[in-house]
Amino acid sequence: MSTSRKTVTKSKSPVSQRAHSIAPSGIRKFFDLLASMDGVISLGVGEPDYTTPWHIREAAIYSLEQGRTMYTSNLGTPELRRELANHLHQKYGVKYDPETELLITVGVSEALDLAMRATIDPGDQVIIPAPCYVAYPAAVSLSGGIPIMVQTFEANNFEISASDIENALTPSTKAILSGYPANPTGAVMPREKLASVAEVACNNDLLVISDEIYSRLVYGVEHTCFAALPGMQKRTILLGGFSKAYAMTGWRIGYAAGPKEIIAAMTKIHQYTIMCAPTMAQVAALEALRGGEDNVLEMVADYNRRRKVIVKGLRDIGFSCFEPKGAFYAFPNITSTGMNSETFAEKLLQEEKVAVVPGTAFGACGEGYVRCCYATSLPELEEALVRIKRFVTKIRKNNEENR
Image 1: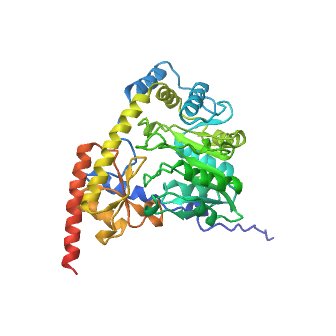
Image 2: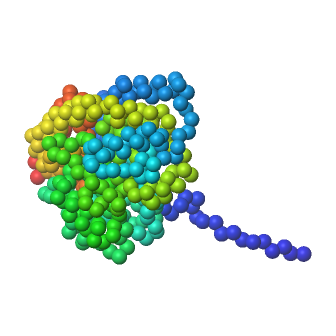
C-alpha cells in the first residue's frame, strides 16, 4: 500500500533576499584591519575621543545604586521626555507633546530603523542626498523601500537643492531621508535652501526623515531644525540623540520626534523589538540635558580648533578639501594621488598606520574622497598629518618617476 508524501521545496538559502542584498558596511573592513595593528592613529571612527562627563556618569551610577534597573515605559521615562521636549523648544522653537510625540530609542540608529519600518511600504521610493551615512540606504532597503541616491557635489558645498529633489521625484516617491550636518562631508544646509526643499516636500505630499544627530556640532553657522520650518513639523520625523554632543556613544540613547500617528506606529514596532531603552542610559541622558550645556560648548570649541588644523593641514598637503561647517569630519579629495579611495585608505593604513575611511563607504559618488574624523587629540591629529604628507609625497614622487 503506497503512501503519498508531500514534497516541500526549500529555498536555496536560509538567509532572506533582503539581507543578501545589503552590502556590509564599508567602514567595518577598516576597523577590522586596524584592530590587528599597533601604533595606528585612527581618523576613521566617528566617535568623540572625550569620556562622558563625570556628572552624567555619576547620575547613572547613582541610579544603579538606587536599584533603578527595571523596564521603563516603552516611550521612555516621563522625566526624560518632558526635559527633551523643553530642550527642543528652547533650542529650535519646536513644540512636541512629551506624551504622544516623543519616543526614546536605543541610539538614533534604532530611531532610523523604526521610522523606515513605520512609514515605508514595499516599492516606496526614498530620496537620499549622497554621499551619506552608511545606514541610510540599508535602512530603506530593509523596510522594503527603494533608496534613490541623489548626488551632491563639493562645488556646491555638498548641499542638496530643491531642483535636485524635484528631478528625482516619481509617482512612487514617499519620503526624503537626509542628515545635516552631514556625515561624511561636514556640510550644513543654510536655512533658505532647507526651506526650498521643504516647499517641494509640501507640494508633493512627502515625508521628511531628518537625522540631526550632529545638530549641536556646528562652527560659525546656525543649525536649522527641519521640523521648525513653516508647515514641516506635521510631515517631519526628527531624529536625534546624545552620542555626539555629550560623548555618549556607548550609552546607545537616542530619540524620535514627530506627528502623533507616526510616533504611535514606531512605538508599536519598538514594543515588539526593544521594549525600552536602557534605564540607566535614560537617567544619564536626563542629566545631560539638565546639566551638560557647558560640556557641549567646551567640546565644540575644541573640535573647532581641530577642524581648522586638519583642513589647513590637508590643503597644505595639496588636497582640495571642502571646509566642514558641522559634525567632526573632513572629506578631502585625493584624486591627485592617482589612487582610488579604497586603495589610498588601505595603503595609508599599511604604510603609515593612519586609518581613514574610503569615500565609497558612503556611496559610489564618494569615490575620489576619504573621510577623516578629527574627533581625536590635537597631537595625534598633527602626527597623522605628518604621516599623510610623507605618504602622499612618496606616492607623487613615484608617479613622476613612472611617467
